[in-house]
Figure 1 (cartoon, rainbow over the protein chains, first blue to last red):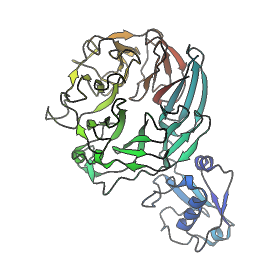
Figure 2 (cartoon, one colour; figure 1 turned 45 degrees about the vertical axis):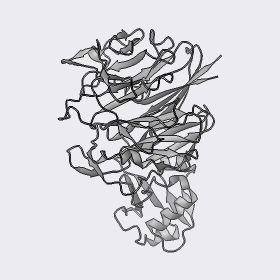
Figure 3 (cartoon, rainbow over the protein chains, first blue to last red; figure 1 turned 45 degrees about the horizontal axis):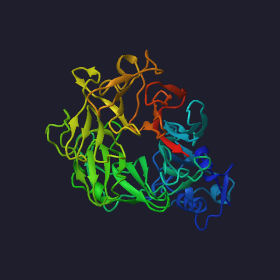
Length: 99
Length: 376
């Protein structure tokens, strides 16, 4: 199981508490996690990445294992600890986004 | 006894305020969607319990919320606003071409007779429509494709399509306004559009007869006379008696401001008196606060030119708030109620057409929009 931590606003929107656990088929990447997340919670579509371009929204960051993966390719494999579920994949609102 | 429901959008959430016909005691619920910018909340005239709300944030973009029980509960509906075809460019602030980019929904205008049909005015300026209660949105491309779009330039708040007026006597006719492109009219249900800006004068446009480029802040009609339009422009309060084909200045005796008059954002029309209109004069195009620190609504009972200040119950010293373009509304009770919200977080109500005012709420986040529903 992949563990995903959403920011508070998106937890409210998706009506979840705490971490989200997802089955992610195939290689565990940003794209495969977000595909699984949006399939489970369609209301999150467009809030983390653009509907059409699928690019990360500018004020959203992706962290895992105390590293920032935001600028990595969405198809790059994430650390094994994320794939094994020992570490969560964090979707974070950038510090500048709360105006 | 009839009731009223006031729908308030703020920088940090939405509020629903209800009162009986006396409009003295208010029940306030909210904030709904705390922390989110709520640009606009509006109810369906065909089903008052059907509400649509524009929810957005810098982090997570645009959401659309729908309520089927008058704002007690909400569900997110489709938030995908994709421009039709290749969007092209409009003018950026510096005059250079800039790609069309969806940013947010400024205004929802539900159909007069179908709760599932809603028009959405968005930034960058375009008109969208849903016919399935918000499950999907499609652009009406004739608006943005009017032919002048590449020359549209944003106002200070962005290139927003902020005003949508549906003609109650003619389902094919609608009006929209864009900052800073101007006013447009469709006579075929939104397929094609005509710029209706003749008579407007704007000192920041070199051509005094320019077809587009005018910073229209808001427009309003009375449902009994849909060919008579009232406009609050960047500077100037204007009136058209022929569906926008020609505009006339009705600033009259509005407060003088460095040799000019008539700056403001809101304008609305009395529910039962089509010649009675309300504006809130704001000082200059940079200061954006009331003249002399005194918050006053100005009322004309003659469709403009002759104006009277209405101040009873409003702060008359040290008041430096603004009243934004979608933040005034009227109810349709026998004694017409008038409502407006400020960037200082106050919502004021008058149950006597502006003669006296009282605050419904005083410490909300900055108010972006105010709508009113008159309920049985």
